[in-house]
Length: 260
Image 1: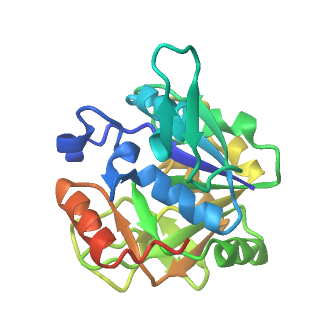
Image 2: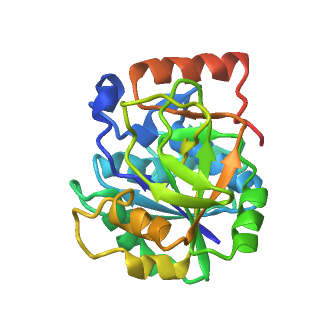
């Protein structure tokens, strides 16, 4: 099963870091947050990734084109053409990464739509490129298959956030924008880490303005085809510089998302 990761947003609320790089390339402990997300999936055996690129996509392209050099020691003999010896130390030798240009200003739904041409299996996974978690991907996939719904979203319960999933049992009744009108920490928020049947791709209109969280997911919820997998463990997004500082502090003290 392939994993689509949304990597095209501008990250305007993290401008201190995203002025020169896309948000998925902002580092935690010297590694891009994108790498941390991919390591989670790879830990559970899912090593085929489709990256939906947009803002400063060349930074991500360059990272993977030169992955061995960014993640290993190497020796270069200056003056001798193509004489570079890589001293292998990383363990990502069996990852398969497809990089897809999805446009600078495209919304998330359209980015997923454009990545759909690389989905050949009956199901695929999808997540955002700016949040880490210790969610058990094996249990998530098993839950999705047992529910037999078109889609499954991981509902998370971070402190001091606003619920945006109205749920009943294991079904999402309504998918709505985060509201500032009230606070209810007993309700989950959309934590990403989705699983979908391939048919979901046909439900996304070919419109660059299509926001995944609007028409596609709202329609799925209205049709009672969107299940929620509750994750009560660690989840943290990187929306602001404060989040960036927190995640780097946690990486030193207690990186709960590091299950590999």
